[in-house]
Image 1 (cartoon, rainbow, N blue to C red):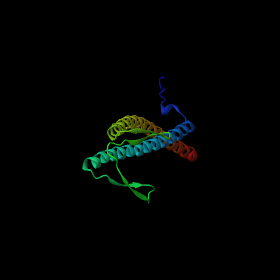
Image 2 (image 1 turned 60 degrees about the horizontal axis):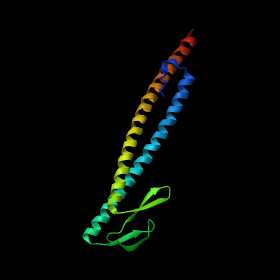
Image 3 (image 1 turned 90 degrees about the vertical axis):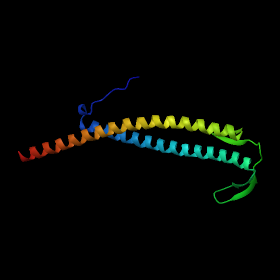
Image 4 (image 1 turned 135 degrees about the horizontal axis):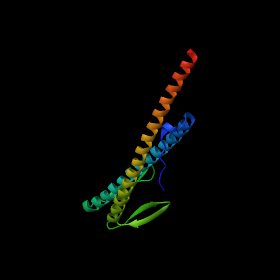
Length: 155
């Protein structure tokens, strides 16, 4: 489906205002999505780093760890060599994997997320340009209207 291109110069002031409001709402929504994806990417990177730390801890034979139960409560734990880790797939679904497989899993998800983030960023850029064009046209029209009203008042 091909997008219809609308010339802002062909719209009247109420249409421009409506269009601007719609674009503003879209931009806010896209910005929210970008923030959520950035947080998700950060979580994936932390998970990948944690998997690497588990592997390093096993290699160093330093198996004692502190396991967070809450933000303020930790219990002592011990990593079992050759044990799998539980990976949250989302939607309350978890799967057991080796630390190596989990690292690969997080790397793949991270790459996919980066690609999606790039696509959303491109959409954001297009919407920002449209918003600027509409805003500029609206500003010019309002200035013309103000000047016209001034001229009519002086007559």
